[in-house]
Image (cartoon, rainbow, N blue to C red; front, side, top):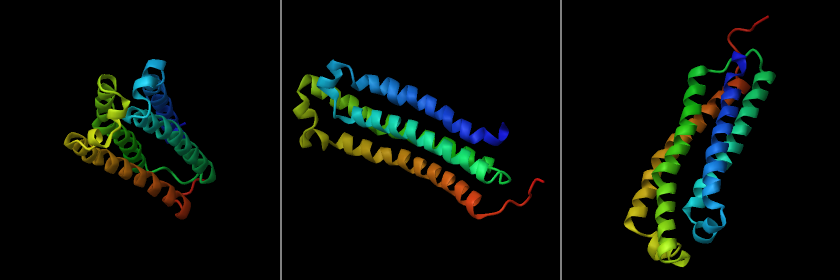
Length: 169
């Protein structure tokens, strides 16, 4: 079972992000009252990022690593590389959501309720200095996420193009 550790971790991440991204954030934007006030604001992007990559991205990665395990049974996963990749992807996704998308969505939601959807989506509202700062802060989460993706890419690259040092007979 240890040979399938990382595909299983990816499938566990699918369950977590399905609960958070599709469940919590999906429910945040989909009740009728929410649809009236906050659909199409940054709260939708929160749901989209968490549900799309969190669920389908990790599902795809889990299957990729599962297939790689069966195509190259003698090539071990680099545990250090996989651990960094897994946690950087998850951490980067959380940072994107918490540092930028969700705060902007909450502020937009308040503006939509108090002033109207037209105002919450207006250029005047969206170009506030606070939002510019939050967009730059999001860069940290983006970079963390990219490093996680590169770690996973390096793992797949080494499994495909390099032979294992020790082969089991």
